[in-house]
Image (tube, rainbow, N blue to C red; front, side):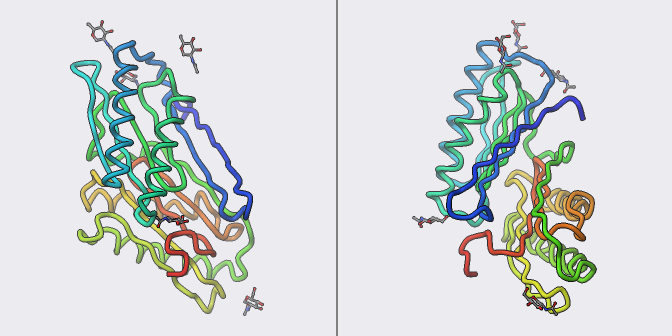
Length: 243
Ligand SMILES: *[C@@H]1O[C@H](CO)[C@@H](O)[C@H](O)[C@H]1NC(C)=O
Ligand SMILES: *[C@@H]1O[C@H](CO)[C@@H](O)[C@H](O)[C@H]1NC(C)=O
Ligand SMILES: *[C@@H]1O[C@H](CO)[C@@H](O)[C@H](O)[C@H]1NC(C)=O
Ligand SMILES: *[C@@H]1O[C@H](CO)[C@@H](O)[C@H](O)[C@H]1NC(C)=O
Ligand SMILES: *[C@@H]1O[C@H](CO)[C@@H](O)[C@H](O)[C@H]1NC(C)=O
């Protein structure tokens, strides 16, 4: 959709390309230039969301009055520790306005966290209008068995994530003999969603895996919405790495 532009930032780590940190930023191209007041509110909002998220792993906040009100949400990936959570959300808070300084709607997906702000109240609303995807390219050894195991396994991860006690987060691994692979998977919804909306979001994300990450040519995939994301790889990527 032409209304939006996307900025993809790649930070290759020195030890291994497999653990490359990926950040995707998405700015609304709806050229609403924030007023000076709203701009100040966005700065205050982001600082508040970053601080609360580093304490609670998830937070929503509003800032300002009347038509200058802004809404923000921050969340860390369910498996990262508080040190990694804090550093991710602080970096995100610094970066989110660099590329989206004239916008009243911005979202940032980092490896370990997600940050979003908008001039409209989006809390609790399932948002699948925009989708980002990333894939790891390599040929699965047994593509049709691989495709089957991905579909069944990610569906199992989804069903675990929506158990109320799991609060929209699940991870796990499976060793498939027909596909000759160990798959590692993770799914997470933003903490403001009902489990019903979470289920809807994850279903859509998993259903779109074949579209964005054709299993004949890829061995890893991320489908990222503003309300949820799913990821699988053939190597451990979630913490602890040996679980
Ligand atoms: C653009 O932003 C304005 C002000 O926030 C809003 O009223 C309008 O609906 C937005 N347009 C689109 C296409 O998102
Ligand atoms: C909010 O309303 C005031 C007064 O009508 C106006 O000056 C200001 O530009 C508006 N702000 C936004 C963000 O639309
Ligand atoms: C947090 O996790 C990272 C792995 O990403 C690890 O290097 C670090 O030692 C952990 N910190 C604490 C305090 O557990
Ligand atoms: C933001 O808007 C201001 C004023 O219109 C302009 O000078 C500046 O270049 C814009 N920044 C970006 C990143 O578009
Ligand atoms: C399984 O993978 C290993 C390592 O890549 C390979 O050596 C082996 O031949 C594969 N087995 C089958 C049945 O594809």
